[in-house]
Amino acid sequence: MGLSNLFQNNSRVLTFTIAGSHFGIDACNILSFSDEYKQIQAITNEQFPSFLGYLDYRDTLVNVYDSATLLNRKRNRDYKSQLIAEIDTYKKSHTDWVSALEQAIVTTERFTLPRDPDQCTFGKWFGSFKTEDTDILALMSKLDEPHRLIHQLADNLIGLSDKGQGERAIRLLSIEKGTTLKKLLRTLEQIQEILKRDIHPVIIHLTKDGTTPCFSLVLDEVDDIIDYEAENLDTRITDTLRHEPLKGYLRHASGKNYMMLCIDKLSEQIVKITPLEDCIS
Image (tube, rainbow, N blue to C red; front, side):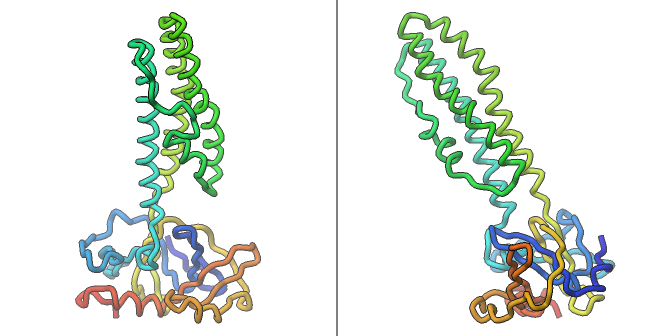
């Protein structure tokens, strides 16, 4: 998709977030963006992890770099993939927890797994997890009740079993497996679906002259395109953040602040981390 209309006003900026840090890049430096991540001609080079490979842009082969790695930050998509895997363990641990409870009731063996919902691995994660995603927040609010009800089953059903009502305890547990446990697992699956949906890398093709591509960046996600006033761009901050390839620090009227990337400094940095034969001109 082209962004040619954005060249008419160089006080527009494309914003994106990496590991909680907000960045921006002037729209006049963007030729286009695409979702052709899977079409990158990938290379493997452990010495230059930011350099992903090449992509054809209008019959010109351009170098592609991972923005997060290039800026020495963790990739959002790696975090989300890890969280998806962790949620799989939480689903399994509670399925196993219920199975262990059933086994304890049937055999009258001592049940040793955590009964306190705040002390199991999921409970500790749930109590500390933070996100700005409203869809995930809405689902998180639905997890607390079924999770606590599941853990209450241990005291309630083992109490029945101790009174000689083991068969009744098993019947009640069977009902809870089809209702409360199912609700807990389904809600966790819905959170995973949102995370998977959001793993959608975007490529921006960059330029210095408005016409010729110089290199491309992979962004984990794009936030917005916003207008800004020149007086709101603090260029003094580059002395403090001299290790970052910045042209300034944008204090936006919305209340959000952005580190504005400088394409010339990015180019200088890229030359240093790219194999000689693949360096951009």
